Image (tube, rainbow, N blue to C red; front, side, top):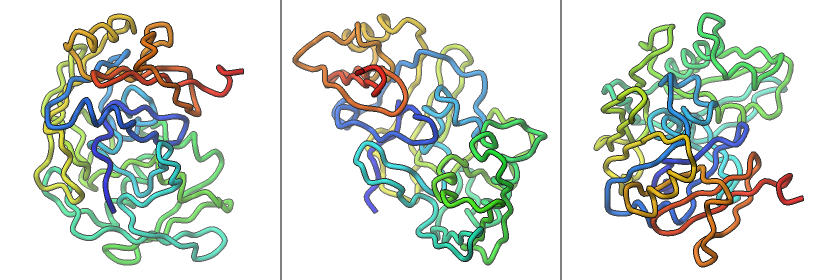
Length: 282
């Protein structure tokens, strides 16, 4: 399956993963990129990736999920670390995992890691964001073999494969406490985190999927969207995924993009993209 070029700078919209607009690829192709985010990160914990400021950096870049929901290309629910899945009974779904996948620490990705990741994300010891998306549904797992796992929702959860798109996978050796050094199966690894200043991701040569064209991405933080837009305009940055509509005024490059969450714009050196919610258009 052809992979997206890069998910850098892409925000979560509820529990749905937005894809990367073509302008991102144009700005990023063949070079390192700098992305301006409006909010810094106080955590680099994978199970907190439903928080947009953390998810923009970690989700599908460092830490992947079993499934992903493709909004940008209207493809719906797509495979990621799971090749396929089917419903075993009313409450249980069987997920078949990709073979030959490794974490950035060199360890093999197996069903045991999926089981641990789900249990860790749901553990009251961590107070992760993940459980709130499951409501009163209790999740249990059973490893069938190294590449197969059964996941059960009680009561019956018909959208369980979709919910797996927000559970980030970590190695089973990850401590049962918030980590500052995330390890994942994604195409990038974190090589620097200067708190309050920047986060640097670098491409993994041993990634299981298609090789991204961007070798290095540096995230910097500016709370003023006008400043972020100016950084893109002057070439100090390449992408600013949360620019206000008032700062995206060039009729030649501004285009509306519908999202399911909020009214924002994406500014890139190739072009700018406005994201306007249904409520904002009314």
